[in-house]
Amino acid sequence: MGKTAFVTGGSRGIGRAIVRELAAAGYAVGINYLQSEKQAEELAAEIREQGGRALAVRADVADREAVTAAIRAVEGAFGPADLLVNNAGIAQNDLFQDTPEELWRRMFAVHADGAFHTIQAVLPHMLHEKAGCIVNISSIWGLRGASCEVAYAASKAAVIGLTRSLAMELAPSHIRVNCIAPGVIHTDMVKELGEETVASLIDQTPAGRLGTPEDIAKAVAFLAKDDADFITGQVLTVDGGFIL
Ligand code: NAP
Image 1 (cartoon, helix red, strand yellow):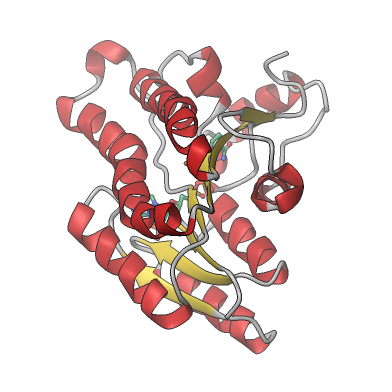
Image 2 (tube, rainbow, N blue to C red; image 1 turned 180 degrees about the vertical axis):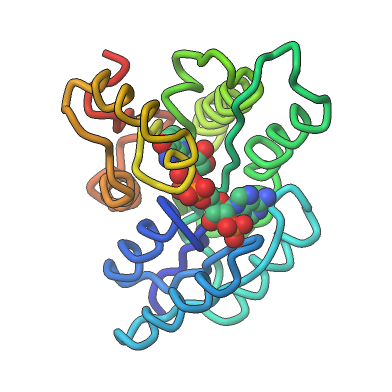
């Protein structure tokens, strides 16, 4: 049996590119989605048509029971997860003083609790095998902070703290935990900001363009490789120089 990867939020944007990249690298891929069933099923079908293995599974990563069941379904089909990518995410755009409590809690539920749930679900097997790889998708805002996105940035900073601490705890078991901090990437999440804001974000990016989902997917594939065997607890910024 080949290797198995589980990608949260694999139905669209960055997650979809990660799924395609990992399938091309030979992984059987669990494609987690919440609302975009059609896109997730189409992506799974596309991979299967190309001779790969993929299964779309619905779960809210904030729901421990649901996401654990989704992981078990993928493991039942393809074998235990060797690679976990915590990519599912939601955006925010409001002042801190106007941020409703539910939104604050939802940000942490999806980004921080979501990673907690999925990692605890895959860890027993990884610990048993003394092998495994976890890649968490944070954000440059989680590193630098962002006005009007305090809940988002704080929850993404939590993901960085989780990554570094867990990497220390798991390194003796040969399980690597890394993080990617994407800059401004051309997905629905960014399109929602409007043309003017997007143009200004491109202006602020030294590389002079938005990132593509594939830019992030390639970084995930690199961190997952044995070539990255000595890399753990790192935050790899993939942002065209945005926060330099
Ligand atoms: P996107 O296009 O809006 O896609 C978000 C994905 O997350 C979708 O597949 C969505 O699934 C899934 N999702 C959201 N909430 C979920 C939940 N509770 N449970 C399971 N899946 C859930 O966003 P994106 O731009 O690709 O972002 C992907 C990740 O990169 C996020 O963590 C985001 O914070 C991070 N990021 C993005 C950028 C950027 O510029 N785009 C920059 C920095 C970091 P459904 O559609 O099926 O609901």
